[in-house]
Amino acid sequence: MAEHAVIVAAATYGSRAAARRDLRALCDDASAGGRVSVAAAVLEKGADGRLTLDHLEPGPSRCRADAHDLLLGAVLVVLAAPLGIHFLVPLAASGSTWSGVASLADHLWHDVPRDQLRRMSALLEGGQAALVAVGVDQSAEELRAALGEAGTAVVTEAVLLDVEAELALATAEANADPSTAAPA
Image 1 (cartoon, helix red, strand yellow):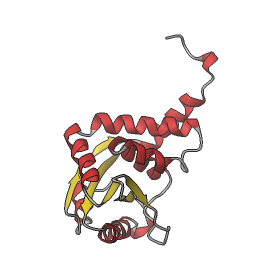
Image 2 (cartoon, rainbow, N blue to C red):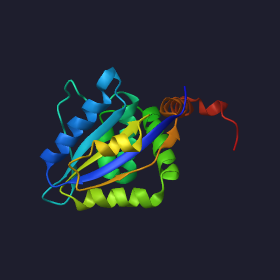
Image 3 (cartoon, one colour):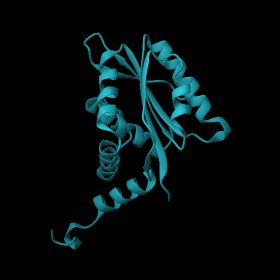
């Protein structure tokens, strides 16, 4: 297992249709060559002002895969906690998986500059539609280029993170027998 460059992006759109077009472009670019390295979700502001997930049907350019789903969930928890939790409920069936997501969220919270996290969170709350994406081993420029229809976008610089190792370590710790743990 090795560290990978993780890039986070949040962008706002005038409509859900525009956000979906950029999602398709982003996912098609990321899955070229058969390697999915981006997880993304379209969000929409409801009539009551609450953010909701726009559930897209998975297709050939499905833009989510395994641990990347959990990484996207951790990003959503950091940017919009209730929405992130809602996203993760069907994905994180065990306490150990939730522990892994918490570890990823902790890394993001401490490694991504807070001013960028605040700007991203404000973007999500301020627009009608938004796209949140996390790219693994992609450049910020590649991610930014795929957000062609965005009104405003914030894209972070790379944060080094070993997603699989973090998930495995948190799972092992959550599943450890507490009677064998060293006293604090």
